[in-house]
Each structure stands twice: as structure tokens, then as C-alpha cells.
Length: 331
Image (tube, rainbow, N blue to C red; front, top):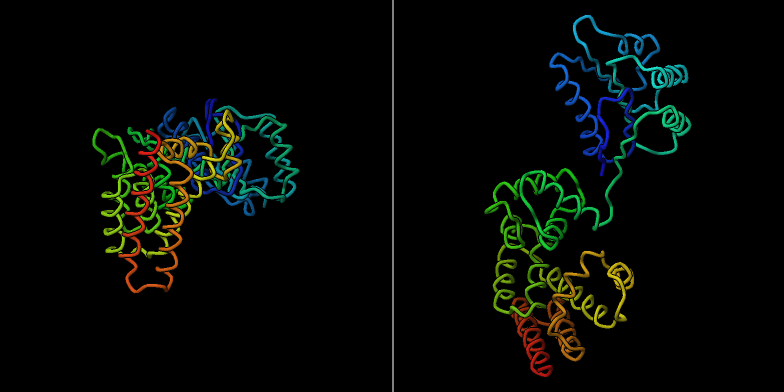
């Protein structure tokens, strides 16, 4: 995620990366700072392919009517060689109160120009895609804080699973939830309520309640999920994934750092803490019994039985009994 630790009003800002939302925010930060410094600041925008040396000279010269000017060059990789040299010259020998924002979606094209702009002193803001769930969860939590609220890791994970990796959708959802949450605190129940139409969320909510031993809540969430169109196969998948992750965590060597455990069992580091809490009260025999129950339900849901709801409910009850039996044997 882009962050600025310097004044946005530098002579040249280089925005590099394919994530449109982050790139837009980087551009907006410069424009906002310019207009805060001068309400009449002039802002112009031009595609790199259309920028000429003469046009750059006009854009990057002091205005008679504004003390500041901002020129946003989109797709700077498309500028001609002569314009590229002019941009370098401006970066090296800036004009006071003139600010260039050079936007590049990334890739190999014009890498040489970008490297020269960096060496010339352009301030770089990265706008990379956030493809890792851990980064997406961190983004959601930051968005909630920016909106004046807070969201814990479990709820943020649930939101990512509901919305997917689209940052614009995640930002909108996190802000809305933070605004509507009691005291600004977003929890998993609120995410589930707002995104009841998202099959992914409902499947994971059912799974989380089941492995935590709250069978009544798991059955209630299951009924809600099925009534609103969730495919039973998605619920089975969520249950199977949760139990597999718990089994892997149970078999992990003691004393490892969360990052090492996460790598070994194939989950992001933040999820290890969630799994540790869910694992409390389980034994290997209990987990094995629960896995067998889900396997039977999977067979039933995929054609072995006529009533998927009954098969899933029976699996949830069996999971709850397996956990309860495990707890009783450890006392």
C-alpha cells in the first residue's frame, strides 16, 4: 500500500503499479496538498502519448493566475524520447510550485526512463496489486481505522473472503461497516449480517462456529445460509478446510514462530492466531472423528442422499459431539 512520509508537494512524484485505486489515491494526495496550499492551484492531466515538449513547457511554467500548478501525466511509459528527456530535466532542475505526477502501470516498457527519474530524485509511490490475503486483511483494517472504526483480524478475513481481492470493493465495504458498527467496532457477526448474500462468508461463518464448539449457532447459520441460496458444497468445503488447518496446526512442532507455522500449514500468519484459539479443546481423536463426519456429509451432499440440509446438520452435530468428547477426555 502506498504511504507518504514526505510532503506530497515535491517537484516530481512517480506513481508505479497496476492497482488503480492506490494510484488514484497517490495522485489525489498531491492534488489535495496543492489545493490546501493554494485554493486556486491549477491541475492539468494529459496522457503520455499526447504530451509534447512544448506542451510540457506550457504546463510546467508558472501561471499568471495560480501560484501552484500540478501536471498529472498518465501512462508516462508512452511519452516520446524527447518528452522523457524534458521530464528528467524538470525533475533535476524543478521550477518552484510546479509539481509533476507521473503515473505508470508497471511492466518493462520504459523501465529505463523510470530508473532515470528515480535517480533524478522523483519521489516514488508504489501502487502494486495486493494479491496476498494477509496484505488484503491489513488493507481492510487500515481502511476501517481511516474511517474512524476498527475491525479485528477474524472479521477482516471474513470480509476479504466475501468481497474478494478488489481493493475498491474492500475499501467501500470497510468504510461502510465502520460507519454503521456500534461504537465503530466491526465484528464477524456484523460482516455476516451485511454480506448475507455472499456464499463464501456464510460457509466460513458456519465452519468457524462449528469448530469453536458452538453447535447451535453453527446450525442457525447453516439454515440462514441455505435459505439465502448458499450452495451446500461451499459449506462442506469451508468445514473441510477449517478442520484440515486445525489438524495441521495440531501436528506442528512446538516452539515455532507463527510465521514458520503459517508457512508449514499453508495459511497467512494472522490466521495462525485464530486457529490456535479454535484448536483449544480439540484432541487428535476428536479431529479425526470430525473429519470423518465431514467426509460422510460431503458424499451425501454430492449425490449420496436426498436431503443436503439434514446431512450438513448431522455433520455439525457430530463435530460438536467430537469436540465435547475430546474436552471431556482431557479433564
